[in-house]
Length: 434
Ligand SMILES: Nc1ncnc2c1ncn2[C@@H]1O[C@H](COP(=O)(O)OP(=O)(O)OP(=O)(O)O)[C@@H](O)[C@H]1O
Ligand SMILES: [Mg+2]
Image (cartoon, rainbow, N blue to C red; front, side, top):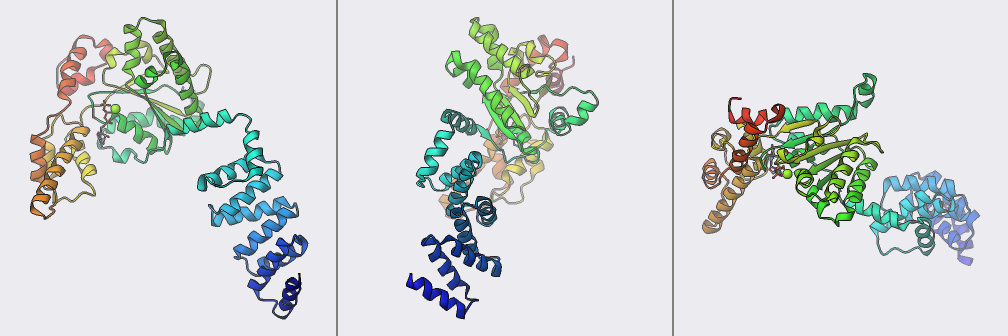
């Protein structure tokens, strides 16, 4: 008590001594003399607009005086400067709770727990945990978040494939970005794109880049995973996946190995397989729900196994052949993958000429082989050397294009079950006359 009085008289002699005033104000706060504390903190803040300690003191004082809105205003300002300050987060969470804004209170509290899992506020714990009367929902949300990605690659990271990028842009990106315009012209939006082609040529990579291109969320679903899940639950899981995408728009929803579904329709005669397909088709159609903002892409190596029901309008009504990259694209893929690696004037023209039928994945494999060789040399000689054109050419010789096998069987489908020219692109690529 005495010391407080002493401080007050000391301040009278040097009223501009801010550290002294803060010291006093904090003591008053501790002694629960809130009105006086408020007065001194206010002086501090008005004299020095950047005094965080003074501001936080004032916020604490306001809290005790039940002046919650000015308390929150100050804390928001402080959090802008320092968004992971635990004290600020705790107090703002409490203030929102007092204001009965449970949602915001929770949000700040969650943030706090993330920063410091050991934090414990009994008060917040009991109220916030019980108020989320379905803790269960929280768990589901957490689960969902696990498989949502935010890819950091875009079209620029994909070499070549200009025609495919353009189709994706026209068919699903533009409608998403300019949906009003499409609606004004009465143009129907919806439907997805099915990418098909030999392995390793960038289908999955491009799907991921599509999401990155428009800064959308990305969910990749392996159909085999869905099938593997406890069979009775497959439909529910599939529905859940679509719902997650709808809740997190804009979202690219990507179905990999989609042929696994088609195959199940003809091969598995059990009704469970058919149910799953029907579920999938009706989710695609968006009959009971709205797929606005959900971009649907699928990929397969064997489109011929897919039931034609998948290709009806509004479903996968665009089927695009993703061929092995041409010389120009191979060059780009080499460049993208050699960037940031120690190289010495690589002659990209020369190496690209030697890699016909190579997939993007093959190119990566070649680079890996070259690097391994280089590492071995470095260990032997003790001198690290950059990768050269010769190293790459040597590696190319040791690697066999992985797309040849695919074309061997694709050729037959394209020749003998090419309904309405669906696989003409394959024939064109192989330069086979129709
Ligand atoms: N056009 C490309 N530009 C850059 N990198 C590419 C390109 N194509 C393929 N790649 C590289 O090759 C890897 C394999 O490609 P990806 O997994 O997308 O092939 P895929 O067509 O989905 O194959 P699969 O049919 O086996 O699923 C990618 O991760 C990427 O690093
Ligand atoms: Mg793939």
